[in-house]
Length: 515
Image (cartoon, one colour):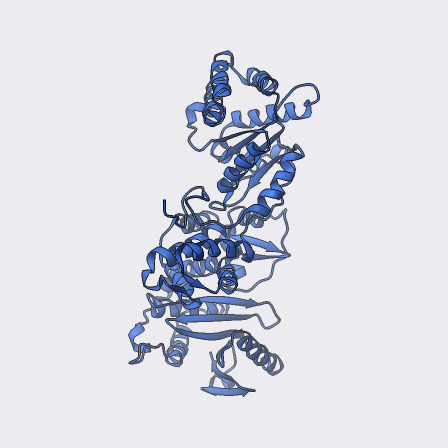
């Protein structure tokens, strides 16, 4: 079977191009071999199921028995009574081990008739572990599918009790649960009162600290496999770094970008370049997928999460990450945020997706109607100077319609919203936030083969303005660009009357616009 990039379900080395997860497996196996009970709770499409599948094979290769089951398809009827749950659980175990351990599977299914409740299930687990005289590791995927049922919490409590009494009663040597939520989150959904919210039945769990994001080195391993198979020319180290630049290693996004380049851009089958990757970024931002649907739903249904994203992206507010901040914790849980001392949007693709989402609301609110053809020359190139001139006119007109506070607060988002219909179908933007006293926001506009660096800055005074020019020139150097644009907002009438300005700093040309 020909390999392909996979973005739906678990990945398998013989069928799919995959990153080398050896380091993640080694770190996790150390926990298993220490007899740890733990939860792999990460955002959706974060390679959790793939990791569990690899762990199942590794555990078996070390002479243990791996029981890998999923609660994905357990319906509400499985939680109507302890008997129903036990029947479903035993059947999952029997089916899981049938391929490798047929006789043990038959024995397990025969035992089902003796089990009527959780106390019977507890005794069965002891009989099972005594019966095989081997260590048994239980892996349960999609545990949060059962998170709306008290019976599941009681089941975890039973496993916890057996763990604490392991010196007197045989039980699983290690238990791994996997899902979006950790057990504390599940319980807080069921019992939101303050007394029980943090009193988890899974407080025996060891913290799972394995980094599940794909590093550039891991991305390299997937690209190397692809190059060897498809004979495509790729500067593997540089390309892996660039994929990481856009995705921050989010597993789904890494695979989806590669999948787009492989399957949806056949004209570039012989060579992958940075330009091809940027086109793939553009295509992924245009598509509808379940990953983006999930972000949209979370923002729509949680005003506090929406506001925090707005403050991070639009206002450039820095936030120190605090585990006990409920909205920050929720954003981390959903994969919208990541933490690196400060709170950040997880990756540049999510930043742009959320920007587009915010822009669409503002675009309709301001009734922005920019016709892209009027800003494109006969070569099909974007003439950014015309865009900026029209934006200045637009802002002056809007000042008579909107309150000044609104425009001052949202001016930078207004500019991005203004760009949206102009770039639609042919380009996109991504941003670099520079947290400084000037509240700078660097935007890179990609339009075909063109790249424009635009800095958006709130006016403070002449000293800060001069410092900002130097910072922009430094950023242009890092991006290997000779021309940049500076839009200064909230300046006085004296500055606005200057019109166009052009400044040379060394060999860097900076074009200014006073808004």
